[in-house]
Length: 196
Image 1 (cartoon, one colour):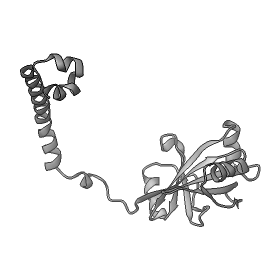
Image 2: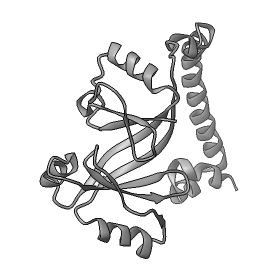
Image 3: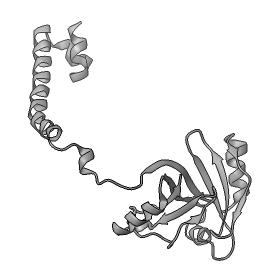
Image 4: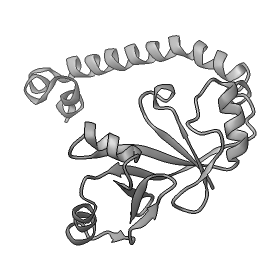
């Protein structure tokens, strides 16, 4: 049925009204227009492919970003948050761990491809306490991405004028060195880098 070929272009009713000859002409016109647009783009594509490859334009780094390790969520009530993920959603949830040097209690929620980190204030100077004062119900606090060489990452990021919130890496919740990048330099997102 020729009208079925025209249906994606005009709908069933109008396609049925078109004669076979008109429908075939319309399809030919549509695809020839598409072909001519693709041909005008072809020189651009050829130029890009014949010039230096994209990988040659990317500076060689002494470090590489790895996988997303976790997304951290600040919560005003840690027990309720644990219960939500464990009892309601059925996730595997870790025990609460205190990290006094970071001013937080942490709980990890295991997901198939990454983790959630639930954060709750520990102490009066906790950065999570000030976050929760502005966001009473909690919310996303930061993302954590693994790197293969945290010291090299720090050196290069400083050269690129990305502010790091500490002079040296601190030991994070996984027992590995971590640093935080200023959210104003990362499009409004607090980014944690963790040694893989």
